[in-house]
Image (cartoon, rainbow, N blue to C red; front, top):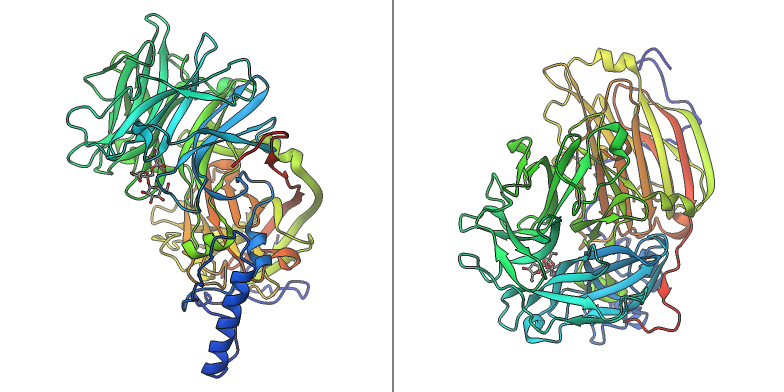
Length: 621
Ligand SMILES: OC[C@H]1O[C@@](CO)(OC[C@@]2(O[C@H]3O[C@H](CO)[C@@H](O)[C@H](O)[C@H]3O)O[C@H](CO)[C@@H](O)[C@@H]2O)[C@@H](O)[C@@H]1O
């Protein structure tokens, strides 16, 4: 490693361009032309867009507004993913239920069969897979066809009962938009595909109790089975009149008759509003058990266990979790640290990710997390492409036995079976203000694993730096500091005028401690306007002796990034206009002013497509 950062110049082998200022937010890339030529071009482009409209949605002539980008059919087609779950068309959202049953992973999700946005036809889509990656679409499981779910079959959960039966509890939006809970069961338990479902004739099984607003009572989740009295405990998210999130608890023996408990599972410490899609599960705190995911329904609280309470914050649309303890007698959750309670502390993902749910995979004894990753482009662009939203790659969840302060989220191991061509790079010095292109060919479906080292001398020489640094309020990857940013640029064009940057930024506080920020900068991810572009991220623990480690899954319009082997995650939706197909590139970069960073190892794999399709012989929406 070089001894000084000041007297070393970047060698000629490095790519020259530095990371310049952030690109303008919305620009059609046209040279100055007269207004009439411009108008003609816009009309011609609009006509072409409508002619090639892949979703077949826009039958009316749509006018291109100032911010509208003239997408071509090829560009929009490129945005569809290769190995993420997405139905053939239309809108999907919350992962509702997942389970392993008779050799198949079942996945249910919020699905609008009629359009590219949420509306009252929201239903339960259904698909099966052998490996959580290659999906077969099935006919929808549940549709809004009764008075108690006329305005939508909303989110819920499926549970495998100890006697082998399966129950689904879900929220229905009634005609008057009252949120009620309903029961559905499979018609034929011997069918491994669970194709047919029937709704209980006693639905709704629960209506909002006194003191709870009609629109604050949703997403039921059977969380605990008490063997001694054969009672299930079902939790439902809500909020109180002071705007504090609360979790109601019901008990039931038969999923038809329910008793509301006088206490609540948890009331948030801050007025964070309505809690959607509540989840509660145990994690093992000791290494000997850390690799076992634990089944909430049967696992008793005890030594070596912590509990995770997760909720989706309707007010700000992020998924927060808290680590804490769970008392079975009082049926209450208590966060270890009230200052990082649900809604104000830890997040599963610092980017675009919502309404997630875990399930216990008894086949592989692991807990698996799914969340949906919405669009950040315009409704018009969703209509043009004919679909909206993705599911993240399922992630396993474990407690971090090293930091003891966070969870570890990591793509399921099955993803590695999709890896094909591998390129490996070692010991690449990245000088201040430099980039280095990784020659990996077309870079649109990738699994990248990289480790970085920062020059020790530069670290030692830095007394205090960027104490108040924050990913979201920073200028992104173009914002230079003493010890960062450094990392990768994915979905970049050759000129780097389009790029999504995933990076670390190291600061040193007045207490002398280093603090690592893990950020993802979307500001230059697309030259198109009408797209929300942010810098997302958080701090991430980097323990003594550890390298700075990144894993990035790139799949067309989604980038899922994992820092420090899953301690922090950031997911972005991106819509490049130039860095697509064979023009998509990957670079390493170091935009620190004073530190040489070494890319110790970088492994880049191309990832196969999963070619999801309708289950043979069936018809899916
Ligand atoms: O589909 C209903 C379930 O979805 C959840 C969590 O995502 O609630 C969402 C909610 O509606 C908003 O979310 C939509 C996208 O998911 C959005 O497009 C729509 O405009 C929003 O209203 O659904 C209800 C009914 O609108 C609303 O109260 C929520 O915010 C989950 O809680 C529901 O079960």
